[in-house]
Image 1 (cartoon, rainbow, N blue to C red):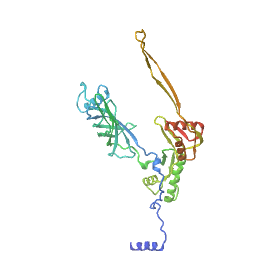
Image 2: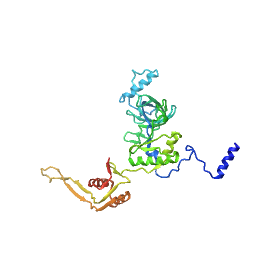
Image 3: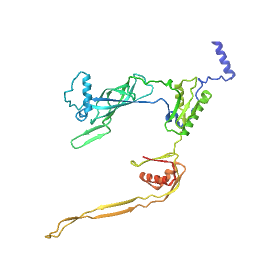
Image 4: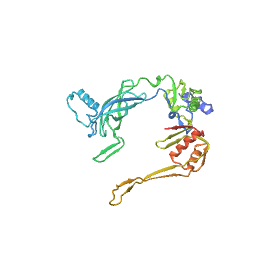
Length: 379
């Protein structure tokens, strides 16, 4: 031991560089800023699974289903009581403290038996509120028909509804709620992370340039870590990785997910005519055009008049219609709009002084004129 220590001290004193093992070498420093790869891409095969189940919520304060209107609630209640040894087949149930609900949950990937997940509970019948209710044990099944979890517990409902004889107040959605950690995992999904046939990062927004940027960032990291490239873009949606021999895959995916890039954003304008929302992408450009916009207002006013006959005449009282029509057009300003970046475009639209609905109409007209160098999406 002393001899080995003297050799190490002698090497350090002589200034000779000791080669580092590629597994033990420190990872390269990642530049700050940008977007992490884990936020723009996900590993293929590592995904959630949706679960669904039918259950009953009890303990409601008279806000449950009307059993005569929701017959499935009555049948489910009778079946539950039969399993508990209570025969109510010939009885007419009149309770309003029970509601039939649908229970949904997302099963995380590679979750083990005994873990807990959150569930969402929504009313299925004519219940007015699920506030204060408790969900009875409900099996949750996957798309293959197998039961993977069981949900049960008191519900957390944020909305409420209060009704009187002449007025009703409702805030939020009282017929839906959540149960934090309300489902217990009973069966694991077949497969494990180490059994993945290949490592593929799939982009959430497919783009050729973004896929190339991801592959370049991973290769820069791999050259500093393994001395060779491990990533290659397959298409606009996926980037394929080679499995390194001397590194755990979990650590590899974790370090690659923290690498940052600047994803490319397509030139796109999204407008919603119902709400007047306009979203303009960063790379949207408009060729120089002259735009004017004015509002035409037409007002029709009805002012009926009563025609009263003279005294002692045999005439009749009638209503004479009187209609007044006026038209007014606001003066529009002619402005030149165009620019090479988003700031110039927004500044030009603001100079015209338009409302969101007017901006939508102008963008559609500019697109028709061929001056909008972007995709226009109308929702």
